[in-house]
Image 1 (spheres, rainbow, N blue to C red):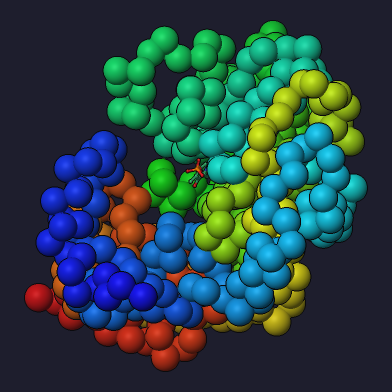
Image 2: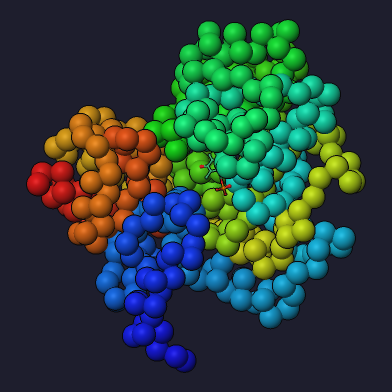
Length: 391
Ligand SMILES: *Cc1c(COP(=O)(O)O)cnc(C)c1O
């Protein structure tokens, strides 16, 4: 093999100019990962409490999904959705067991899963309007962006998809106003915990009101579990402890442990919306990716979920007592610590100390480590964050 790691850094730095600057990337090039660690091209190790933005739930290069994908790579890469493939059928069955009776549509990303939710809701209800939450995030494609309650992300991209109204999270009156019977709403689209919007959990009373109101006015309820789903909050779906059952669920980030995959799960009120020809995706349900996702779904059992809750409690209680932390929000291993200072320099300083962490808005430190993180790794991360906040 060419010793890429010796000759690469300089030529690859120059290559950065060849990438459209849609992200303000940090100044490291990640070349390898294992478990909760990644390494850069200088050989430096980092403890990874980002996990590719809540994606690599079972850890980097997790043996189960790795073996499943490898085995499938040797058998069949792609067949298209003109035919059935075994991994896709197995995954639909496994997800249908978790979201009882749900039928799946497979795509390649979270944004696409939400686009599918918008389309099936319009088709199933014969209506057009969408209600979503201020501060919510549903993706960057035009439909998903139009339902994203963050006006700064709209600038320069209008006209947006018309017919979207926003309610305030955990404000039932504001939701009632947005969902008024005359509003002709097709879809109520909610994150169970607003991730990008600052790690804001929906209160059970708000979620239950949303579910009842949607049913009352004839709209479908979709929970966007792209970030919060797949065991991240200590239950397979983050909506479970809220005491609701949505008509639609969207998944993506953690679904295939880092291979690109999105899914829409549709219950009985929504599923009749799609008939052959209504929607599609060339790569959707790709056998390699679906094989990895099957291994992920099978790995999320009671033991792993209990561990997520335990490690989440350890991390949250450790964060609460640190200097500069105002409050800690979230559930399981989707946590946000509201700081008394801008979070950007804290993220940079943590990386300097060998810990990768995220932000969510201007002053929230977001932590989304792999679900398999150990007690020692949580303690190590807390020590680094404490050192950074104290300095
Ligand atoms: C990341 C995210 C999306 C968008 O997913 P992509 O795969 O980047 O398109 C949608 N909804 C939520 C809640 C997310 O966190």
